[in-house]
Length: 123
Image 1 (cartoon, rainbow, N blue to C red):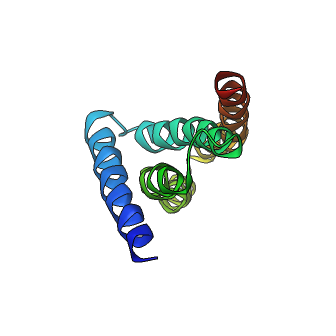
Image 2: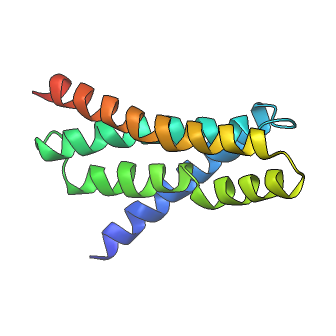
């Protein structure tokens, strides 16, 4: 349905602007704090959105707007990948490893916390 495309586009615009704001606000000269922050926050919030969707607290419209649109554009795997590669290219292997570890462990953990919290909240 065309309105679904518009919802995702609107949400994507909102999510991209929010991510840009955070990238402009958080200092990331020595460590990619902005990307880590948006990815961890997005993981947590997507866990909540999915829990709410599964118990029908959010309908398809809201899920497309928030889950696919806003959070899809807010979080960024591609920037995470490039930032990791650049740190490795600069010989900053330890920092790159910490970044990957924090992202890979904390992202799913926060998604789980969001999911469980959402299940309790919407139950």
